[in-house]
Length: 427
Image (cartoon, rainbow, N blue to C red):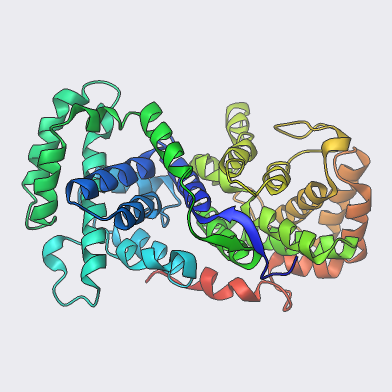
């Protein structure tokens, strides 16, 4: 299969995976993106949107917070009606999507989805994008105001939500949209549907509607880089980790003799392997010392979270398993699945070795990045204990100079395709 081959991976399934990953940042509230997509689509229906625009605004709602990676940013966005730094995640989301053709149509509305309605004069943006951006802003703020009440007294609290939103009609929000909300909110069903178990089912049902876009392997790789960027920005200590693991795993796969197609698939799985870390609290990732047993038990859940995000994507199949097995061992002493040696594929073993190698080279809050001799010594120990595959570690040792440069991001033949995306600053 060439890099331009068509895969059976539906674009909407990937959009839902992005939402599932980004929403993990909310920690105790992992359905915000789903609810915004639902609210926006219901408002659109009240406003008489075409079916095409209803599907568009639903997907825009799922994607609107793709620039959020940290708990602190999420907390500020939900605890302040108009946070002064809200533009940062809008700009990040815009930058991530603007050059990815299948999702570029969402970039401009995401850039302006915290821009008040009365501030669009003089901004070079289409009327369609203005409407969509403001509809998402309204939907987002409705959810933020109502979220604490969904499981308890939402049918009583809704009047206060409506009163709060109505006072911003004509300033923050399009008056037509606010009027539509005032009509829509009269339905108890609208509010009840926002409870976790109902909204999850709604989005699942929407996910069964196939997109008319099927991704090529090249596009899947580009989208995976976007997702890798989101997770790697969660902490300065994980910056570029996923991309460097992907480069190293692809190199080792090629050295192992796997086909070009398998090497590319391993690269994609590696880019996605740490998505579940978005649900790991920031303080654990940035702790300047060993984790205690509670913190370790939380950290050990991230690869299962990765699996849960990826396994629902039709067509991704075995790549979800390869990504989720990156902390497993041949001796079944890894986590969280403990596969047998028979079920621990060579592709997953390669990713596991690449992940360990890169993590040792990269600095962490509790230690500096290690030199080559120490890295190779630890890889030998993990091979002797039966955790890592001896033949793959042997390849890494045989090509240790190249592997080390790839892991630290200094090899000129690798990482070039990602440098612009990862080095651009918001300001």
